[in-house]
Picture 1 (cartoon, rainbow, N blue to C red):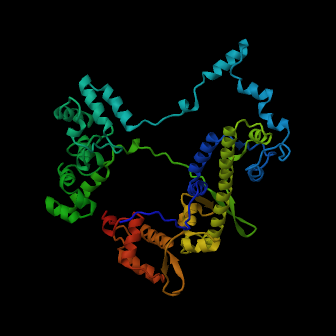
Picture 2 (picture 1 turned 180 degrees about the vertical axis):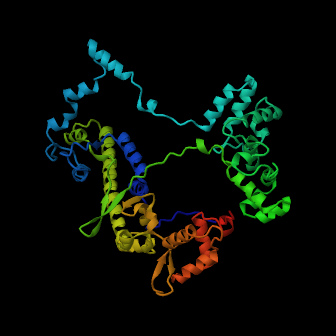
Length: 501
């Protein structure tokens, strides 16, 4: 076998770092974009955030066109035009330095005022913070009569509880690597299970419900308004211990037969169980709602739908005028310094250009979506049409992967509410009366939800009945498709929705 070297010419597509950066910026969400731009401002000294008040300066596009002329040039002062010295140094005015060092005054009274303002608590220190489940339990543990060793075990157990208040691991795993025994941990756990909220520290759902049932007493019916002795204090416990699966499937007759009780007694026991809390830690869970800021607004102006880009809150960037003058005057130092400035200038140009291209692409794609879904914006969700990425890609002259990146994690606000761009892309179901026309799967899901909301709880609609009603509305759909859409909308089956009382 002989080794040799061969020269071969070939063509291949290579993504440059600049192109990779543009693609990355294109698929970022609004929050991620804001964080990315802030990072670029920190890392690149040639980039500067343009103040919203200083609209008299050059725009980012003008800055980009002007800065491109610097690349590869000798940066002679005669070839470039700059603003005068007053504009360049306006950020270094005397009043500016006074404001910057305002808290470092040396005169008596002003010094006291400045120092007192420095002692004010920050905003984060004044914001009220909700008590977590762990903090609530540790507070009760500190007030308990347990010994210091037992409290150490208690802190270990509390630290291993999940957000629902359950202990999902065995005692051997809890005490692993410590000198505590499993018997000690079990004893402390029983004490923690008496803490508020009731049911905390349980290992499973049955134990959690039994702990709560124990606080109601052996015969809890009197406190809930039922006739005394109806359950004889044992039916509820028996259901919790052995028939939770049957209860979930509403198999009341099977439970009554297994326990040798009447259906009425099972119904009464079910009412008790429904008032118990399966997740004791729920009141302490973090329910903070995060505000979604739309990337674009779709509004109607003079009878036409218009797409408006929302750039509020995003930093507006430009090339720093001080470095522009420094590079243009030819006083940028050694070759290493010049090479560094060249690199940062090209990076700044690419960032500004990528942001401009990103904004134009988003507006272009959303305008195409509005054109396809105009009936939806006019009349609502029942007029939403089937749409795929390929249709929009062909309309705007871009690749499908680009459309996918643009629509990922982006939101628009219109008269129909706040919607993700992915919402408008959905499959279609054929219409029986018009085979060439399609019905959106999103609107079909909405129709299924409406049917379930209006059904009789004692006789809920089965999947086949829902499919028959949809076919009566000229929508060609199978029973298994109805079951699929129902599961995707988190709608239980007919047997689980059924209520007998």
